[in-house]
Amino acid sequence: ARMEDAQIAPLAGTDEVWAREGWVERFGLPYRPRAMGYGQSAEEVAAFRLEDPKLLTGYYQAVHEATIELVDSLSEDDLARVIDERWDPPVTVAVRLVSVVDDAAQHIGQAAYVKGLLGLR
Image (cartoon, rainbow, N blue to C red; front, side, top):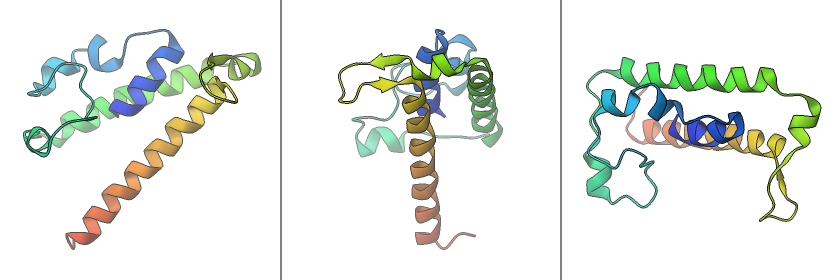
């Protein structure tokens, strides 16, 4: 959810749902408000506690709604707009959206793998 939020917000020209809808405060995580897990130690990751799964699903639902709103608003010209020229070829809005889907699929696969390791159904 954080990854999707962080990639969709700039495309939509908004702040992340995380910051603009009070999710930072509701989660009350022991990290910097904009932390996303990159570069965190095992101890920092272990400090994450989720008492109510509805908090996480609620945040993801809000991010998903922002994503759908953005995608529904895009024209063909919008999809072709270059947003990052540091790559060869440059990254367009369409490529960034594919990246969001790819990242999500990889994270779902990682979660399924861990679930299998733990013998969970």
